[in-house]
Length: 432
Picture (cartoon, one colour):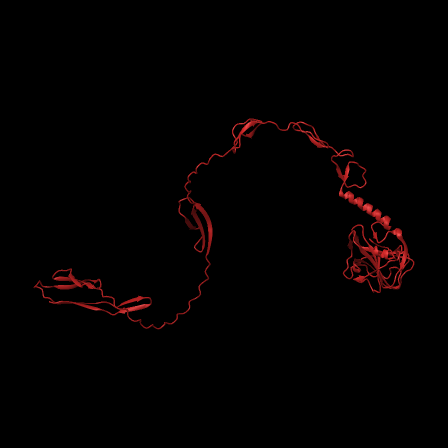
């Protein structure tokens, strides 16, 4: 008797990294042909289980039935995996399906931080959502760290120097010798027992005296009170710089009123020497020297006509010059005014004018030389008040003249070159 068993494996496809390997069906046939001894008559033969064995193992058949009712169980080894086959052709792309309807716009989810709780040392950290899946509110629990172990106690330092113990009321510390900090308590000795004073300092005496300073008088030094008054007759008050300035201003105003005829002005010459006049010339600049006795801020300039007024004037102007050698520089001036010198024996005062970039005020410095100047452009120039005539001598010229002239000018020019006059003491002119 012979038995032949045939098993056909199904087709196997293996896909990896987008590559597919197909193994065609494999058929295995097992034939049992050896003739055994005569057995009992076989009534039936059935196929039992079929088990796949490991690749490379032996195939086997076992009968789980009887000799007359055989149930054959087969173990067939799995085939060894073959080499990877070539990639098959890509199939045709299927037709695109119809576009589905647009879904409703969803609600944007939110995330927020909720509470933060400190947990007990050693407990677990936790996060919980107190909100919803679309509006999350996270509550955090973070454990507190354990307290660290106490560090070792440091060594005790050496005892520092201090005040010796003991001592009683009234005692003081005193050095025993030159050793540092070597002191002891001792009874206080010496000290102040009485305080006296020498005038103007007065003392009530004793160890705790009342100290005072006596008032000053004309016969003794002492404390004085300051005063701004310039009219007090007190013999115990002291004048302040303010009082001294007031007195100076009063004295200056009185001196100016006496010397120049008016308080608060400074003139080229004192009024009591004004005894004559000078005949002007058209186009002539006359420079008359002035040296202020105090710092003075000029706003106005004045000249005086005498016995002849200007005839048909086209320009009359006053100015202030500084000088270096024979060169005069204009620093301030008035506006031209043809009504100046239109009457005799009259003082004409005009304010400084800013036209041409000149200042509205000009400050003269005490002790510095300046010149008050005038020009007349007219058919006939007016006569001007002048100091006593000087002798026309070389000695007068050498000792310092007071008046300089610059002829044939159309206005107060700068620079101007002046020639010294040896016959005139200078025009009268004043600033205020």
